[in-house]
Image 1 (tube, rainbow, N blue to C red):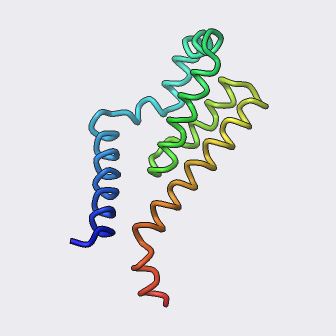
Image 2 (image 1 turned 180 degrees about the vertical axis):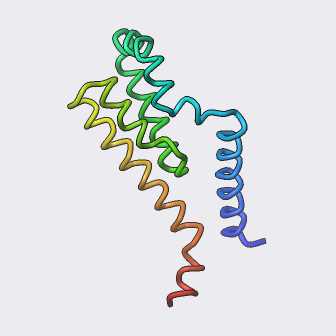
Length: 121
């Protein structure tokens, strides 16, 4: 089998497994406004004691949600502003969303490059 084809199959399988796990484990419930409102005090306490860890974890989750095009990015954007304040929230959300979108573009380009070139020349 072609090495490039094997790489594509592995990437597609990893994405499909991640999306299935997201749905199967019900992780979408944690990306809702209701859950965030109910947990706001807890998040504020954790953020006050572990700022960098919370920001890094938030960015990692945001990047993953954006890169896999999972629902919840809009709610995470609002949560970032509410948890971190305006200026820190703007910086964190901007970097995380840009990195996630870039990864999504790289994956799409890697997986669909040949099809697009054959279709549109």
